[in-house]
Length: 343
Image 1 (cartoon, rainbow, N blue to C red):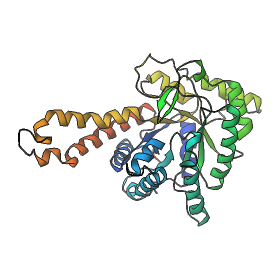
Image 2: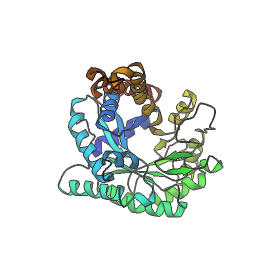
Image 3: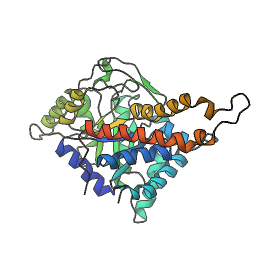
Image 4: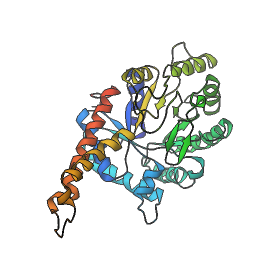
């Protein structure tokens, strides 16, 4: 059962919350990056989450039609087969989906899982993300309510982003300013609209200064301690015990985060952290190194034909997979999930 059932996915998240660790959620865009993620989890003895963004789904759908649903379904089905060979459990997730892509991505994918569940099976994906951060909070939560109801019926967990993450990812961009910090009022309004598990389980991508993309430590002001304020404020409002953590938080835009920032986020209820920029770099770097070191072998130079052993995609592809897998292992160590796999 390497692909988590709905029950096991809930168990994974509960274990992370109780154990103060989080699962790396690795964005993939190919069968090879999928294998790299699975390999990294296996080598770290960590369960994990594998996710596909709208841009990743378009790429997987092929450049002739760029069909997001076809691309994501195909990779998910592939994952259900190959993951059987890895001794870890993973959940499949779709990453950022803004309003204008809901009808072409998340809603059709939920429909796929609805049919599977009606037939007595499990959903194809274990969770989907609705990114309404570009909308007003009222509109964002209204759409989230509709999606949460459908997700619950299909045994899927919904992820919602209620306030912006800075930077740009797959065409969704936000300025880096004070709006990157979720307020207690935002959190209370979210709990009022979506409940605290009674209407279906959801993951919350709250903003504490997060920025997508490449940045060095210190260039962005992260305030992971803000997550405690959000939990405390909602707990007080809804009569929960002091110190409880009503939300399952997601850490977006974490490239360049310090160990202390990650540790604080884990202590305050983060159970999932998205990893994309760093694993992209880890995958690409050895490919570039191979090409530069073997320039004459990968290209036809001065009438020669190059060397098949050098330009064979399997040669440099193995290097890329190993490098990305190593970065996934590092992520599990940073997030404390290494060695915690479900037996």
